[in-house]
Image (cartoon, rainbow, N blue to C red):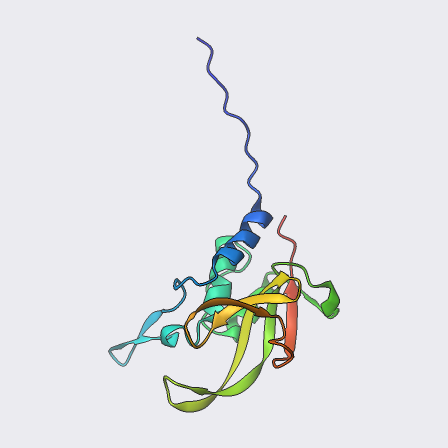
Length: 162
């Protein structure tokens, strides 16, 4: 009896990557990340308020596009550079899946009850839309890529994922 050969399957990494970003909308997966400080367990991402780098770097790490998972935008950005992501200056040529770093802003943090300065990160979806963590409810949400001109883009990083 002749053995039946399995058909060859080619994994479509880029399509899967982009679909994973789209499918992240509304997920609570990145809401919490715990650490220990002075013997006390704390939520480092403050129930999703500070989860943007955790969200972005986790998806990138699944596809080995960064070296590790990060809890700060600064750590994420250093890893993007280390892994040869290309910063683009022509914002009109943003590709789907690009990582956007928005300029930091000072905002009231409801968890610490203080004004704090934070940068923000997310993914470009195309058609002037982005997905990033919504700090008020702690899950990824779709929005205009400049938050309707209220947040200035600091940098955009692109890398082919073929």
